Amino acid sequence: MDIGLITQYATVGLVLIILQGLLSADNAMVMAVLVRPLPDDQRKKALFYGLIGALVLRFVAIFFASYLATIWELQALGAIYLFYVAFKGIVEARSNKHQIPESASAKKASPNFWWTVVKVEFSDLAFAVDSTLAAVAMATTLPMIGGTIGGLNTGQFWVVFFSGIIGLVIMRYFASWFVVLLQKRPGIEEAAFWLVAWVGVKLVVMTLAHPSIHVLPHEFPESTLWQTIFWVVLALILVLGWFRSGPKTDK
Image (cartoon, rainbow, N blue to C red):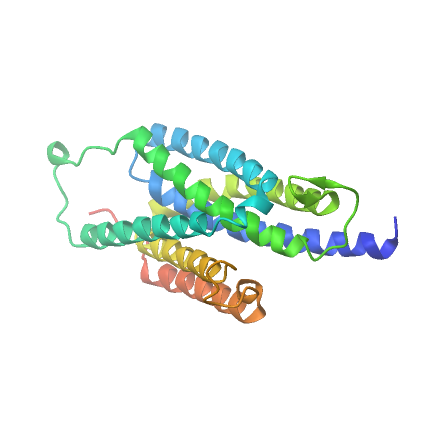
């Protein structure tokens, strides 16, 4: 194989691993805030099911990536769901700040375990579409090698596949870390939901740039301008959320 071709694939593969790691962090934070209200033993189980769901959905998304790119409705539904999760979470987080601590006998009942798992899986679906389409858009810039798998060129498919696997490994550790972080700094929960809303905005941009909608130029979601705006705002949300949230204090 030509050394130049190997260099191209290695470079794009490394960039995709970094990209998938960042997108996995988003997914992991959403899982963490959704399972946080559960008791500790159920929280671990819900995280496990969420990670399994993320694995399965990403495999499916990769094999049907070329088909998913034609369904703008799926991206729109993902955006609507993430906006719903974000709005509900922000309202609850703000109300909890002003809530008088309840006595042990009057504590709110834990949420339904399986309903929490369902919400986690829906968020996994939205993030699977987001991360797969972003990875495919970058991988298709590579030269073609071999035949096709799942509508993608073989070489491009394996780059997306392996970067996705590494992203899921990163998600496994991020999810557990975020759960611990939310326990130590509960105030960061609202910032996490603002992050969910911002990812929903990203899916809206992808929907509006779809050839069937064409409100925005088709190339805009992958443009340097939009990518810069997205990551700068995302970083600002995290930084502001960190400084606004203090460590947990026992009263």
